[in-house]
Length: 357
Image 1 (cartoon, rainbow, N blue to C red):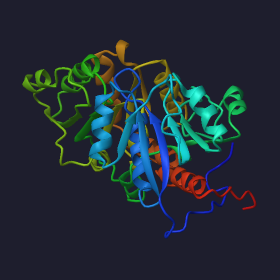
Image 2: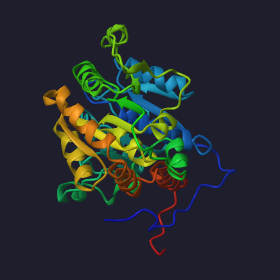
Image 3: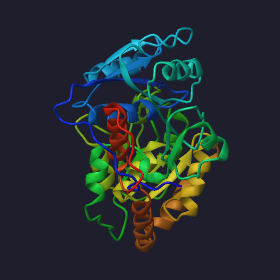
């Protein structure tokens, strides 16, 4: 496995004209929202050097809105004619498990001499890219490595917001008892899990402050607000609050096993993680084996009594929470976005990577 920092990259000079970077990604309840979030983070880091153009599905209205909100441009992706838009591009970034049109898109990029960088989770959806990057905890498979010219793997490449990296460097306070809990179950439909988690915390009969992240889909969040969770003091995250800072200040984070889990680990929040599918189950199990989280199992099988028992175990054991925090921070340092952005800047400059570090 190639570790972060093992290469010195040639960066694009500041006075160079901005190059066109095509970004193919997809987001939504079925595939998740992490793919778009990662590409938006990277696009923000490359703004001075590149002109990102997102290739989005015509019906992916949410992604289109997010891209425009970030002051970036997009065009609709046609799997039948995926080469549309490749003209004058200096690089192609792909972050999606949806493979419609991808093989043709990559092949057309190669014909035009456009380098391809792809970002993956768990080695899924390998493609014939020039550089494949997988920041998940599980090792890449041989099949994944055989597709790309160069593979960069390990959690040092997991792309997170800058605020996570900044908070990673700050000292995390572990209180004697749990007072504040953050629930972050991802951007999709959390209706199956939120009430189970809240019922479990309520049954612990402790006056906790509980903040929930409502996600990006409407699934009946208002019904949760109307429910009395006494003695819990429950509220939804406000738009003015920074998620990373909120998790950093929390005594416990209960999250799904996607990007939210990596964010919690990076800022040092003691973590209980549930899985919404078998992919997340593999990730959470590996994180638990590494001593970085408590595995709550599949969310569909989770019971409020399970939440109550895990909470009681952690509430009365600050040393366990301290160990979880330390192990999580050792795994995820928050510098992945900077590392991947440097790779993309090198690609856009037309320079190759120096392997003689």
